[in-house]
Image (cartoon, rainbow, N blue to C red):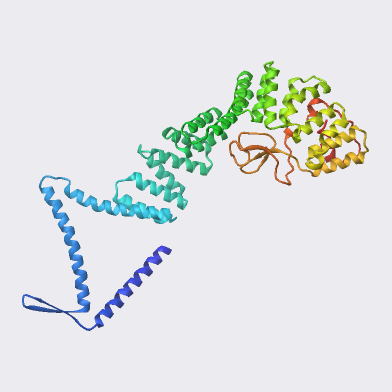
Length: 478
């Protein structure tokens, strides 16, 4: 509607300007005299302008007629396509002009104009791979998904444009949320162009979402071979996929294959905490505690984590608290100043009922870097030494409002997860989990930070008259 109004207004302005110009020329004095064969023709200024315009038109028509006559001459001399080529050139010229204008309209965000120019180009050109592509992209821009999908389907018929058609329909299905069909289309697009970076990324993301770990590893290998993924990143992500595959195998009841997959995941990325824990448990199940200990010590040195301590305790489940304290020194000796090591040692001393040593372990930690866990440990220590209830309650009150310490957080959307996973449950990003401190104010606490005395069996005496939330925290020390 607006475009039609603009065209009508422009037409009226042009007609008005031409009329005004003709009136001004008519009123101009003077003219010209032309003598032909003794006959004189006197022309006014307005007549001269009309004559000039007519002369230009005649020259243009003459050139066109001359080109047609040349084509006719070649046709009469045996070139059967000369005349058809003459008309085809005119059509191609108009078609390519419309195509060029359509591309410019598309680049400038004028979707409807681009579709109009695409239709005009399709009328003059026999180039559906170009006009259909322009039409599909213009339809996407205007929000006409049905038209876009229909046009992309036309591109599937030509080998030269099949990839573009598959990719276009794939994007349509992703926008609609039909991930099952999008995955099939992504596999087809990947088969057509295995080195296409965007297709690789889409296929890898969809395979991870569908837990197709084996297929995702193949896609990841293709990214490495095509040079679109650095080798170190590939190694890390391949380990994540191998670990996820091992978990699925274990869920299916095949423990032997799961052990092998877990060990492979740990070999690919020794600092991947869940892989190290699963590999260590695989070694324990195989009766190889020495290998399990070696794996856990190596990973703990890179990144201390409660799950590693839990798995390390499982190597010798029935040992005494004193023996456990001695054995854990091999795990913690390289990271004695790390907060996780200090809290672990405090837990072990609590389990051995050596409360003064436990206090020394975390005395500076509760002042310099207090967390809910370290403050709850201090409450357990105070209870262990027989302190009054109000002292225990004071530490618990601080613990209720203290930061929760490191947790599994998505690097992309900062969503906190109770457990590690290969894919973020919030944004769907792959391999973005990091063990780090959450933003201030977050209160969720993953199961992985439960205190080691749950495993080693510390049993502090119950306290009376404590708030419900305080009882919950103190119960974590049991």
